[in-house]
Picture 1 (spheres, helix red, strand yellow):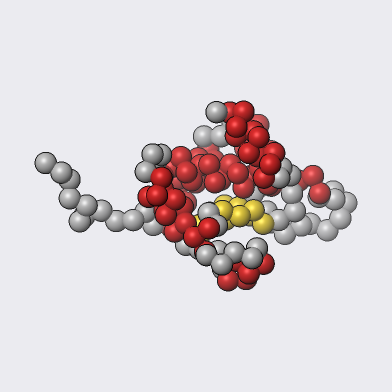
Picture 2: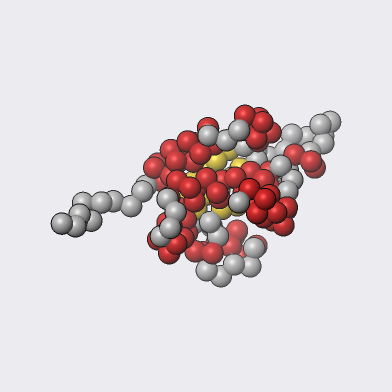
Length: 136
């Protein structure tokens, strides 16, 4: 007997926030401490201005984004920078989860979160991918 999916709902923004908080709490202490007071925000999609600035036409192509001055570029004596924020985009993440079908939603959310915190720490995409490859 198959389970009907007629009573299932897509995870909400609040569900995503809970999964992101759990993923952050599960990170090694040193990584969490290095991330500091980064704010995690969940939206359905990136806004039009962000997509335009990044020259992304399809909003489903962007699963996450780091916004702020990374730790290595902060000036301790200068004005306080804007709060560092990690954006996780619910609909593109759900789309990736459905397309892949081989990994849990919490794992994808954790992956995107870690990737964007890597940018907060001053790592570029190549460095983050190298670390991920070493971890496999």
